[in-house]
Length: 476
Image 1 (tube, helix red, strand yellow):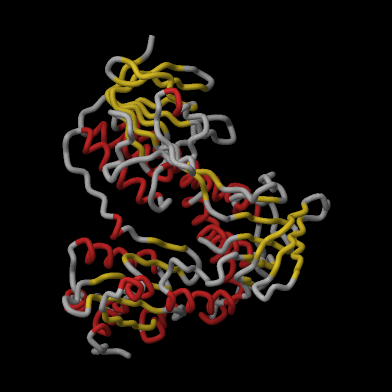
Image 2 (image 1 turned 135 degrees about the vertical axis):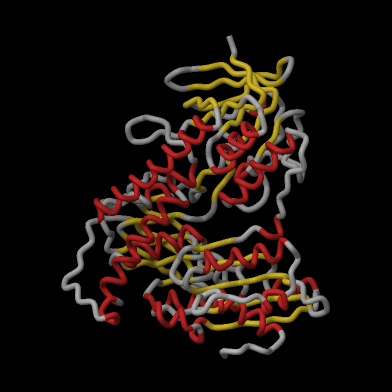
C-alpha cells in the first residue's frame, strides 16, 4: 500500500533537500527521494553540488592553492619549506571525506526535521485522487502518494556530440574531481566556471593546461573590464586560454591520451594532444527517468520542466525548482526556489529576486558579481555612473600578498541606485554578499560609501569603489 505524504520532493540536491526541510518546518508530512550513492552504495544526498560539484571542487581548489603557496609564496613570508610534494591520493581522500560529511549532515537534517528519506529513483506513475502516485526504484522499492510534488532532479553534464564521457580520458566534472594523478598535459573544452576552476586546480599541481573556448570573448557574461583583468591574471599564471576556436574531431583511440582537432580564431587548423580532456560545455536538465509523460508534465525543447515565475508546472500541485527549470544553474538559486515553493504550498508569499542572485567563480583571483554589467547597461541605453577601486591600494590585500583585481560599482546616473557590483580579487565570493544585501534593499552607492568598514579589511575596497562612483576615493 502506498504511503501518503503532504509533500513529496524528488531529488535531494540543494533545491530539493532545502524544500523538504522548509516544508517540514511549516508542518507538512514530507518525503524526499534521492538516488545518489556513495562508494559503499549507501545514500549520498546533496546532488551534484555536494557530490561532484560545488563542495568537492572547493576542497581541491583549497588543497591546490596551499600547494602553490608553499611552492611559490611562502618564501616571501620568510618561510622555508624545502622540497614540496603533493600526495594526490591523500588530497582526493580529503575531498571525499568532506563530501561524506556533507552527505551525512543532510541525512541528520532530515532526521532532525522529521523528513522521511527514500533512497532510490523517484518517478511519476499516475495522477490519483488527492495527488500523484510516485514510484521509488532502488534496493527497497516503495510506492508513495504526494498531495503536492516538488521536482528537483538537477542537471547533468553536456557531452560533445559523438564523444561520450568515459571518465578516464574524456572527463565530465565528475571525472575531473577524481583523477588519481596529475596529467602532464590537460586539455579543457569550455572556459566557464567548471573549466576555469578545474584548470586552476590541475595547473597548480603541475599540469600543462590548455583551455579551448568557442566564444570570441572571455567570460562574456561577466563585466568586460572585470573579465579582462581576470584573463590577464590567468595568462600570467600560465593557464593557456584560446578563444574563438571551433572544435572538430576528438580522437580517443590512442592509448596515451586524447587528440583534439580544432580551428583557431584566425582560421588555421590545429591539433591539441593531451593525456586527459575535460569537457565543460554546459549542463542540461536531468529529466530522463522522471516519467513526465505519464502525468502530462510539460517539458521544453531542452528537456527542462516548464514553470511560471512561481515555479508552478502545468499540473496542479506539481512544482519544480533548481537546475531542472529556467534560470541560472546555481545551487543557491535552487535553495531560494526550494524555500519559496515550500512557503507557497503553505499559502505564504515565497520570494526569489533573480536580479540579486550572486555569481562566483572560485579561481585565484576569485570573480564575483551581482546585477547588471556595464555592457548590459550600455545596450539598454541606461545612464549610469561607474566607480572602481584596485586591491593594489588596499592595506589588507597588501598584507595578504594578494593585490590582483578590483571592485567595481555601477549606479544609476540620476538616482544613484546600485545597478551592479563586480569584483575580481581576493575573497570576492565573501565580499559580494554586502552588494547583494545593498541591492535587495535598493541602496545607493552613497549608502555604502557612508557606512563604516573595518580597517584594515578587504571590504574597504567595496566602500572605496562606492566612493569612486562620485569620484571621491580616499585611498587611491
